[in-house]
Length: 238
Image (cartoon, rainbow, N blue to C red; front, side, top):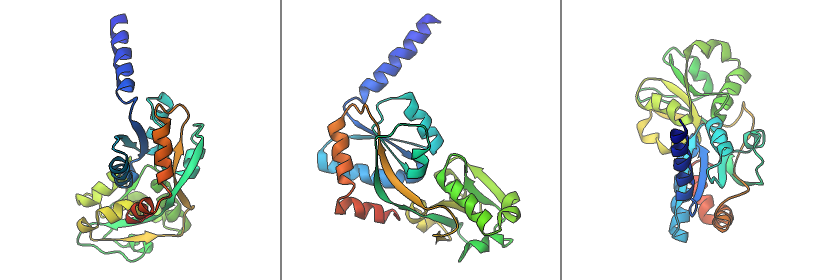
């Protein structure tokens, strides 16, 4: 047993050491396309690598608490502030927007369309750990659709998982973020942006103390306000 524990510890140390000279960013899975674009820009401008990891925000928070050299987390600001993690700053990226996507063969023009019989299966991310699952839940409640749609809901852990059910035809519609909708529009029957009916969503990069590459983190955070990064955010629906 002692040998096994030492082996696990050694692997953990090697894992952290392997990334000690790279900027590590964590993000909600729904922001993967956005963060991948930002990482590509950062790497092209600096010649340095950026390590990325994704999950629902509950998973991300758990990973941050375990350590591992994560320097910043991209997510919704109010969630980040209530996660119990002592972030040192919150740097704005853009406003998050809820979207409803539908599979090929279907169309949608308003959230109320979800009450139609053709939307028999509706995917939604985990409302307790994924911001857009929470926003979708708020929308259904605030529009009086919650009771009617409850039996049609198919749970997913993350925005990409909920969205994948629509892409594969396993669900007729899904609550996602606008980033997922924009980046998958060619494989959808359509989507709508939903700007009301849920709490405002401010997407930010929150920084952490103890970053092993503080100058690289400073460089990345400084890039967020540049015209090029703002174009990246806009491209991804923010």
